[in-house]
Length: 286
Image 1 (spheres, one colour):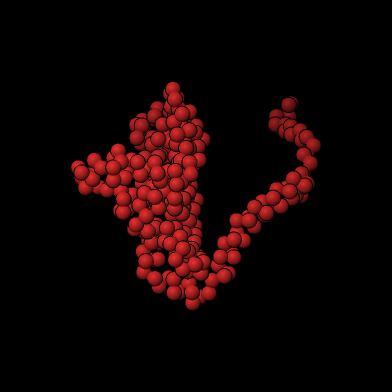
Image 2 (cartoon, rainbow, N blue to C red):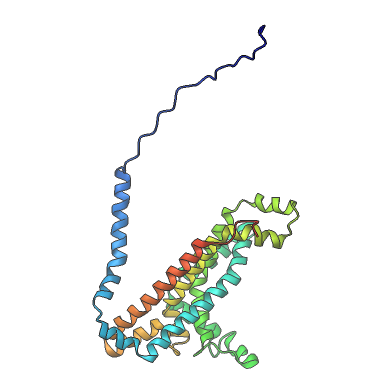
């Protein structure tokens, strides 16, 4: 301009967008809440009934039984070992299934899910054929290294692992599939090797899925009865001991032992869920 002053152009402002009205729960949400509440009540009411029908005296008496405490401890130990083995072997398998394509991949995925569909008594009989006294692995392993699977913790872990490992594999596989492979490729171009990429980038992103699968494996292992009772029976895990109490002394002591197992399992389940939610440091972090 002639006067040397800089002219300012006023910004053109368009009409302000209308503020969205706060949404109200519609018929769909109300129907979902109703259906979910029915299912939640179906799951919770039997557990409340189990707890409500127990007296403190009866619960204390059963808790004081050494064989009941030993059975619960054995179930927790076996479940911990089976969940650990499922993580050590299942996470690498899940990574391969999520990142590679090969002939027969669908068959392998179906075989992993098969223990979820097989009746657990059938699973116990099948395991007996392999790990029993005259089994494919049971007899030579006992002769060579003295390892036997009948009447030992090893047999309990084998039975628990067979029926619960699919939870870890499937949860980890879904987690790996959700991670964009380009993130791993970028990390490789920045100088990270395959192991450092996996540990610093991929694993933190999949940690929640892995811990969810491990938690489900642990919980399923604690509750296993059919495969354990056929392959091992003695020493008794908590579900087997509860069944024996029911046959020998009736409902009262069996229900008290079941409540004890439920309390312990619930506490551990909440702890594992908290660990899964806590996660690990962010990808690439120190």
